[in-house]
Length: 242
Image (cartoon, rainbow, N blue to C red; front, top):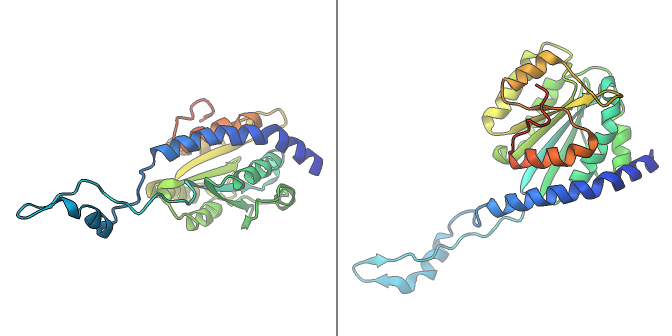
């Protein structure tokens, strides 16, 4: 398994970093250069423009400076049900690669009947932690993810699942509605079978698509391009199946 992960890291790592570096650079350039106006420093800087009877003329604003934290937050919710076995190795690899990107703050949640947050820094440990288990509680996983949202407008939630919820789909859909209304973007990556074809619950996928949540099927070598498009807020029609 270690050798397999090393080969996969060598195959996908450079492409992922290169593709995301371009999209994140574009996001950084679009960000406002200042978080806000530092009023005392702005007044001090512009005192020389004071004119009696006319007040203080502000010719230059002084900000608090550019934030040095991550540009975006990524929440990965990984379905550990048995039907996800083929996809979980790739999910573990890409999760570990994302954790290594300082421009992203990535957290990984794995779920079956229960939900657990995992350390994605070690892909081998992550693979073993993601061993398939019984049950699927997607709504519970989304609730746990929602509790970890710090900046909704700068958060991308990626749900890797076949969407075969263990109970009724209504709680799952309600949780998606709550996430979307708060500003979180939600993306679904569907399970792939041994032929590389998507395998998923058609009814739930259709309900999510009706809520403008893209449900995408993506080969591993195309994942960097898909993720870069999602981070930039681009259309994902190329990969959407519902």
